[in-house]
Length: 102
Image (cartoon, rainbow, N blue to C red; front, side, top):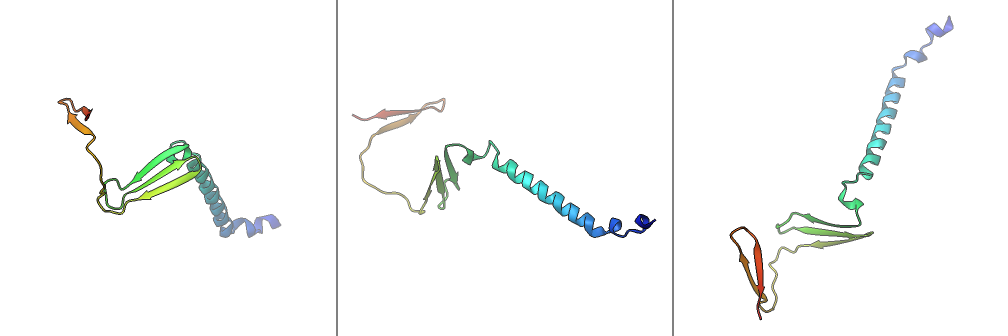
């Protein structure tokens, strides 16, 4: 009748340890699912990610194969010298037409 008086079977710490083990397994499975997600933008070979588009702190990240290139905006308006290349017209249906100059 010694097994009826065994205190190890009623130890509440064993339940806590089992719950911690269960949570570790769940976290591991979730990490694998996130890493293998086919909708992840970085699971493809060529990807362009634009962060904060149109803002002064805009960043563009380009991934080509294993190489990542990041371009950061300085917040200044671009300037330069050049020549007029043509004229763009918007049609009534919303299409744009570019007419190059001669």
